Image (cartoon, rainbow, N blue to C red; front, top):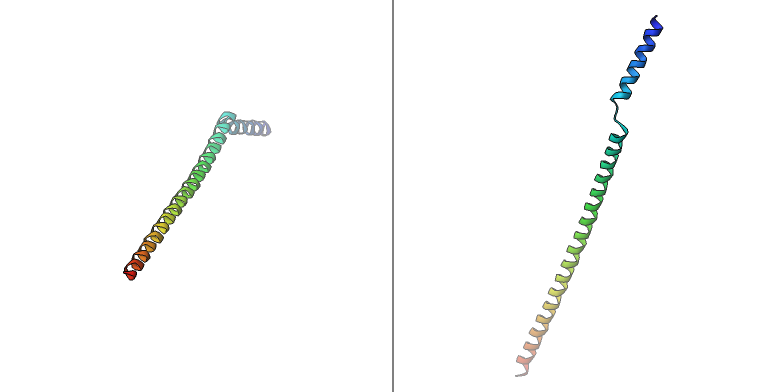
Length: 87
């Protein structure tokens, strides 16, 4: 009799564990949510890299424009000094 009751108890506990676990649909939804989250993080990472590259390019162009302006100003200053010296 004890063995029968033990078998019934084990069967009941096993059934309870299986019944309380997540269904296949729930597991698929969790996996899909996980994959979506990973994709969102990867997209944000790529967007951040692209924004940083664009900012670096903008800064390089501004630095180059400043360099050209400084060179032109220096050349104009030298030319003006040379003109004054010839007079």
